[in-house]
Length: 139
Image (tube, rainbow, N blue to C red):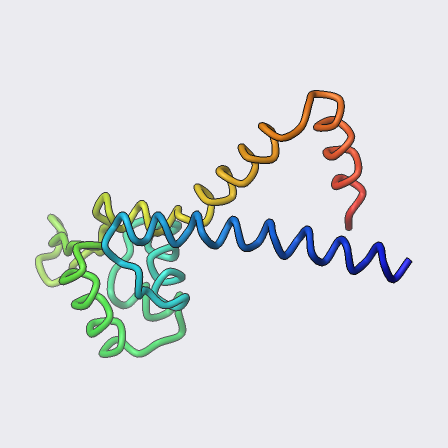
């Protein structure tokens, strides 16, 4: 059983490496190969929440408003976000993702899709059904 677990470890390590390479490629294409995991999480938070303001993002990420302001200014320079003034209250700015920011926020999903595509291209239909059945048993 130990040998089988080691073999599984190697297989999953390879899959994770492929996914990581796909993610890195997406970040490189956006010119953002040095993004941190935290920054990616913040971009995801902006993407997942509607009408995100500086205060709302500070609350979501458990940060201070000055920290959020500094981070958003960096994102603006990276061309990942832009600020949009509220039509109802000129003191409020909404944080919006640019195309680049959206690509980064969804990079992990796209990378996973690429891994799945590679798996699908490597297996016939019967093997694919078997893999789905086996992986479906994992809790």
